[in-house]
Image (tube, rainbow, N blue to C red; front, side, top):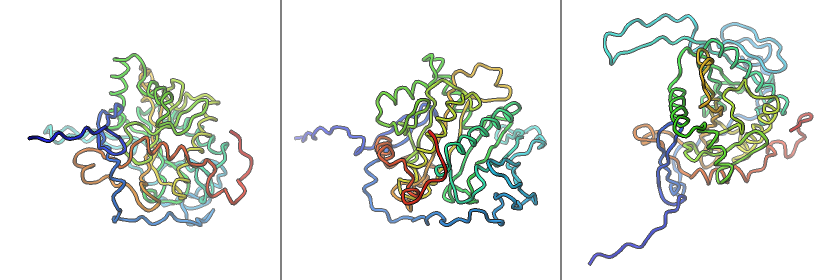
Length: 365
């Protein structure tokens, strides 16, 4: 006689399942029970501490000589320059026609810039004042508008920490503008357009409102912005930064929205650093409606947003590796988005480095 198995109630924190990512049109395997396994893998070295505030040998510092021989000005705020070793150049030649459908190439033209956030090397965005972060946002918007007048895609991104490939301990980001839409941009263009055509509302605008109602994955909010761990998150403490208003590009943000953005970015990044009391590594970047020739098109299906992809999983020394199954099958994560959001939500917003010291200068919300 066959013995009936007892009914098991699904619990997302205990039972593996897959979640759909409508923005990328793919799936992620969630296996939260794997957090119980002992870790005997690689341990990362802690981030460098006691970084010199101004090191003449650091090519991003004011007055320093860069690899290409240029000398930086004695800048006091943000500083933008053309990358000395760019991945794209504006005058690259055409590859020429292909003689086989399996061997195709197209032109790749563009410009690559580096933007320093601050003249000091021993500071990061969460330790800057709101006014200093607002200056970074204004420069982002300005560059997006300037390069976007010509190029269809302007990718602003920050790699923070050696773990995410940052080769210089100085607060900075990069801006790559290209004559083509990169793969992620093409995917988000398609999925947001299809959702808008089917439902009559921008996908991420509706998604932000949904998350604000449930609050399960909401980490932070203010008058103009939401920070949440997306339902389909892949990285352990991945977050999505969304404006409440329907806005398609950085340069379209109002002054009030930029002030609120500076405030909520600082709050989020302080929480990140406080999670394991370490300068939290991540890769982040802005996605907005395409520019260049697309400026004349109806891009109302787009919603401006920023992605934060941090690799730390269990501690400052244990990271999430995207290898094996993730590379050969599909993405997999080791804790639920709800667990990650709760941990971030419950963290203090005062940076751990400032608890025993006086903060720099005056700050306003």
